Length: 118
Image (tube, one colour):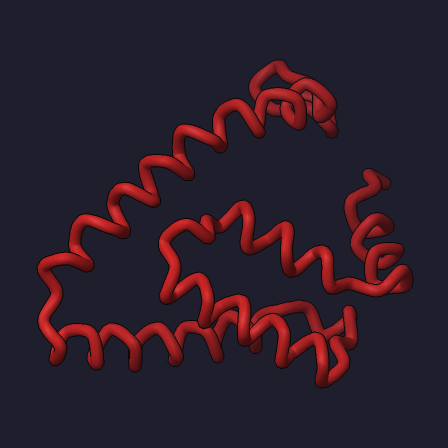
């Protein structure tokens, strides 16, 4: 298999297929997230919130240092994670889109540079 292909598909073909495949997964995730919330006790919610905040901090720590987020971006990204926690409608795909929408032109250039095959 050559670079830029996955299971016989070119990168362009994969990018065309992904949105079609992503939509049913997002719907399933939404369904799975809303059902348990109706049965969750207050104590469980407190425990879950603590775990989610810990994960949010870890996720922010894992974000690439080379993008050099400013304080405003970090605040907005934290708010998006909080919104995702409270709103099952904010899927991973939508969260990622919103985070990418916060990037500066320089940060986009860094991401695009990393995507290019050598």
